[in-house]
Image 1: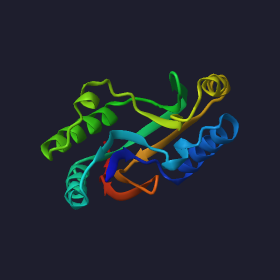
Image 2: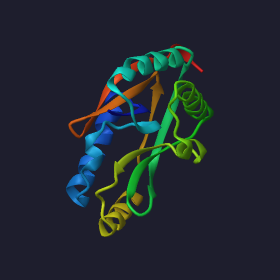
Image 3: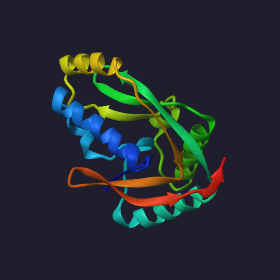
Image 4: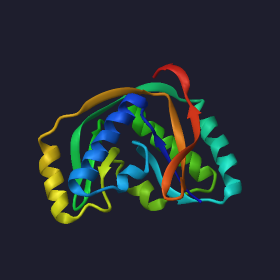
Length: 181
């Protein structure tokens, strides 16, 4: 089954991002991003057997139990041409360290993605992608370039998501230690 690991923001931001995705669906005919909750991908989709999910969740719980809460800021919009529109994630050392520790943890458990591991980390929250055509991308880029968005939230856990019937669902939340980093 396909899974990925991400930071999922709290409810108020989930709702705000959902509204942005719905706008993209209504005005730019891009609905694919509606299949998942708003998230910052820490490790992209990978396939594991059902029986491997529980041990993976335990490993994530152990990793998360060593992390302290930190503040994450989302600011404005950016793009990956030719068809991705996203809310920009302001990079910080806590986010980078979490991603690096996660990659190491997964490697220890036999999960590797060498391509992902060697690419620069460019965290983002996707608004529209995949089914966004080139003309619609240009229209979306023009629209979102004139919009402003800013939100901050406390990162208090990481989530394991599983693809079920074409939609991504959180199957495990691994909580951090309390307190700021």
